[in-house]
Each structure stands twice: as structure tokens, then as C-alpha cells.
Amino acid sequence: MMPTVRYILRRFSRLAAYVGLFAWAVGTVIVLAFGNAELFQRFGALGVAASVLFFSDRLAQIELGRQKSVEKLLHEYGLELAAMRQGTPPQEIPEQGFAVDFMTEERHFDLLRQRAELFNFVNVMLLTVGTLQWGFGDRIVNQFVCGAAQC
Figure 1 (cartoon, rainbow, N blue to C red):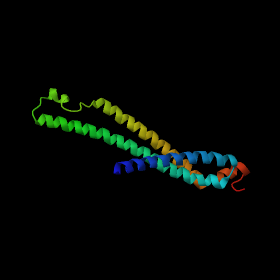
Figure 2 (cartoon, rainbow, N blue to C red; figure 1 turned 180 degrees about the vertical axis):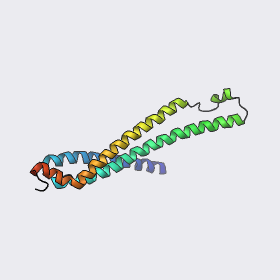
Figure 3 (cartoon, rainbow, N blue to C red; figure 1 turned 45 degrees about the horizontal axis):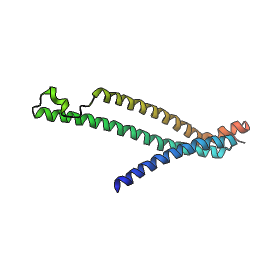
Figure 4 (cartoon, rainbow, N blue to C red; figure 1 turned 90 degrees about the vertical axis):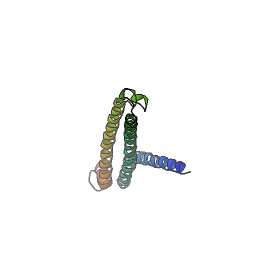
């Protein structure tokens, strides 16, 4: 019962993040097209919330992938150590465990780092845009529509 509930909640949080990001993007474009300064500014708050929800979920997934790789490596080292304690010659140790390809795991770590850097960059950009939209969105739209900060 609990794994099912946990699975549903995890999927729900991911769905909420995608819906929030989509609603912010589409709502911002539509409201900007109509020149509604007040609603444009309010969509900035949704952009900040979407950034927090979406990117915290993505970065958590990256961290879980990193932990899985570390656990796999530690398990392999543990198996090798146990085999050596039992007197298994070092040449026969790969037959005892997972025989983890350490170079593949290192490439996996590199991929996780690159993904984390990309998500962090996009997160900072979305937070910046959302915060500016939330704080100064009405002024920006009024400048385009009326030619002044206030219509």
C-alpha cells in the first residue's frame, strides 16, 4: 500500500511541476499579447513557483541517480573486500561480484554533473525572469503598451 501511495505522490508532484511551468509559459505569452499589465505581473509569481517545483524535482532525480551509482560502487568494493578476506586470489575477484565497469560509472557521473549544471543554469534564468516579471512586470508591459511606466 505505501509504495503505491509514494509512487502516486511522486508522480503528482512531477505533474504539478510540469503543469505549473506550462501554465506560466502559455499564460505569460497570452497575457502579454493582450497587453494586460496586472495579469502579466501576477504570472511572474507562477513562474517563480514553477521554477522551484520543476527544478527541485529534476535536481532531486539527479541526486538519486548519483546515489545509486555510489551505492553500486560501494557494494562492489564490499564484495571484493569480503572475497579477499575469505582468501580469494585477486585475479578471481571479478567473478565474485557485479564486476562493475568503473569507467562506465565514471562516465555516468560526468553525465549527471552536466545535467545538473544545465538544470541549475535554466533554473537561475527562470527564477530571474519570473522574479523580474513578478516585481516589475506591470511597468514593463505598460512601457510597451503606453510608452510610459504607468498608463
